[in-house]
Length: 88
Image 1 (cartoon, rainbow, N blue to C red):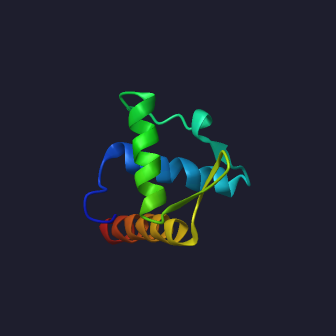
Image 2 (image 1 turned 60 degrees about the vertical axis):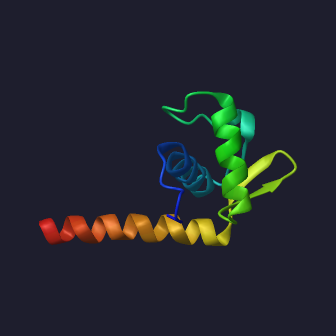
């Protein structure tokens, strides 16, 4: 994650959009249900920060991972799998 972006809401937002993309769905901000987020305004601020950082794209009301965001989440997941394989 980029410096300053390691927060459950930011990471969960990226993971939710990753799963949605795998299902060929785009979510609106209103549909973005982030577990543990303290309020809708927190989700909105993190979504705006992730857009600003170039990790998600916003087209009208729809949110999706950017290529950079998709690559970041994929590399994080691959890193987790690699660590798990080393522990086996």
